Length: 99
Image 1 (tube, rainbow, N blue to C red):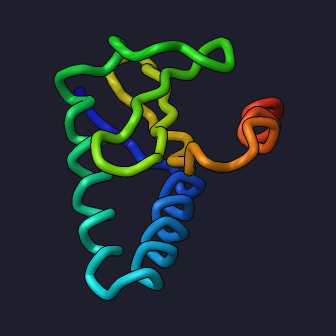
Image 2 (cartoon, rainbow, N blue to C red; image 1 turned 120 degrees about the horizontal axis):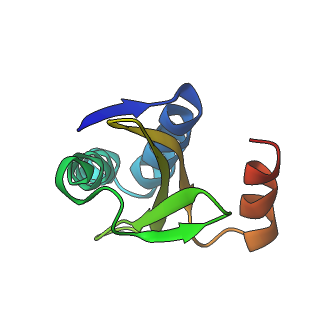
C-alpha cells in the first residue's frame, strides 16, 4: 500500500516537532521517529482503525497523544492530518468540515 502525506499533515508534524523540541532537546526527533513509525504501520494495518468524521480513519499514536487521520483511496493511504489529541475537539472537527 502506498502512503502519501499531504502538506497539511506535514505541517502538523512540524508543529509537533517544534513543541516537543522546545520541551527538551532531542525529544522532537523522538516524536518524529515515532510518528513516522506509526504512519509506516499503515502499509499493513490501513483500514482497521475507527472511522471518524464520516470517511476518515483515525490511528492513535503509540507513544504520543497524537492522532493520524487518513483515507484509503484506491490502493493508497492519504494522510490528511496529524493532530494533538489534547486540543479542543471542536477545533479538530472544524478542520474536517470543509474537506
